[in-house]
Image (tube, rainbow, N blue to C red; front, side, top):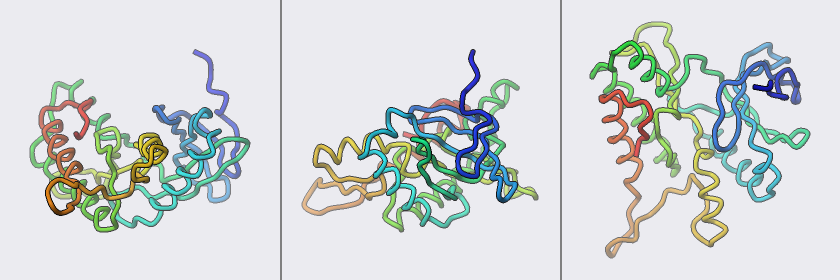
Length: 227
């Protein structure tokens, strides 16, 4: 397998160190902020997406919206930029991995997550979603892979981790961009309204994701999405 050509490169003041993960939209790297001597997560969008003007505009809008969220269980963007045709986003680096990684580790050890810990992590995610909904923003892709686990310095209630939602506005951006092109409401963050019945009401889809995701926690299925 050939080495990633981005490794060792410097984008603005961020030196790329290693690959953390790959997804449909891009690659996440561990990078070093050379000004602060700080490890960060740097997500670079796929070139096929970055070259699209509409996508770049949506990416910037979503990054700006996510930066306005201020909650301990939501990852916050630190920087957004375009350099040498690379469209990238910088956030805090959480090295313990995702909830999906944690569930896979437990399965390898023939274990399952205990109910009190599952309940506490679910509560934390629910609290983050409630806060975001108050800001009229939705995630739309809540799943174990988008929930990072940050080790706490002291053991908390039933868990030693703090759940941190990531990819706010990015995980479903391609879908929302295509919808806006078809004249449907734009924005991953737009809190969707159901027109069923005489009145309007906010979509309950995120709640269904969360409840289904809690079932995935209890069954130990790290691949199951919160849907």
